[in-house]
Image (tube, rainbow, N blue to C red; front, side, top):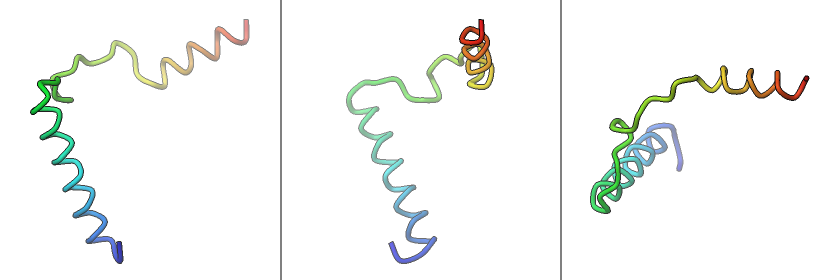
Length: 53
């Protein structure tokens, strides 16, 4: 990649291909996955508290 525009285009193209592959294989699209109950920050905080006990 020579510049930011090329990098952005490549990123977009790869993302599109990944989504096509998920669809073709019959997988669950990312936007259809369930939302987690806790955020990453909450999970990390909980783990740190467990380790400090």
